[in-house]
Length: 326
Figure: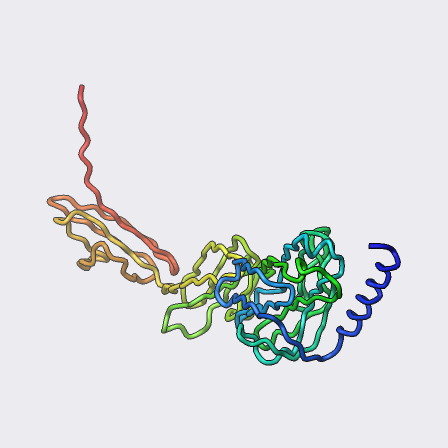
């Protein structure tokens, strides 16, 4: 390709790109390929398309964890060797809703660029204003943000140069798409106790949570504490996975102290001189000083117990047999 011809081609390509950008238009594609991320955000979806096809990336209703899309394009030699012959564009306001048997659409082109003359290119599309997506030597961030209120992003490929060979027109692009996720997960806490009068305070990593119905945390380990004036404090260590919801159920226990008594079956138990028969169970006991008396055979053992609110106590009478050899 001589220099004069190359300049004509470049001017024609620039004119086409300028006229195609920033304008609402009606267009036709050969086929729309749908990729659906309604369930697994951690997955990567792959599709092989022609140079006059489009990709509709359908997103879940809850897009809390998604800040963008990464589109990896494997470019065949037949396209990369004909520089600026095929363009990639991102659209807004696409109608009708994309489906595979629909080829005619209208929409507004937000971004257009020719595919580079290399065999692989990564495009990153932001879907949130405040995002952490950056350019790198391996990937290009596009500085527009499509409106995904209809639940999808629309990417179109099209030839923008005349005179390319049949090999280029019939080429196949291998596309891989995956969501770019924020490094956070959701914690869903269910407090179980119907008799609670005042909502407990929830602390995570010693920070009071003001909105316990929507807790987003960085991925990794966290310390959870539930504090209540009416119930015992509950402490947990939790692990938050990226872009996933962790459910935790907490049953609040009364602040009243409890006592569990264990002893041989032929023993009698008295607490404050009253017979006690609820063995091997945690039972509530009043705060203060108590006496526990065990009677077995002709022997008895008496112990004193100082009981405080919020504490659990265990009384265990065991009989051991020691054997010795001389």
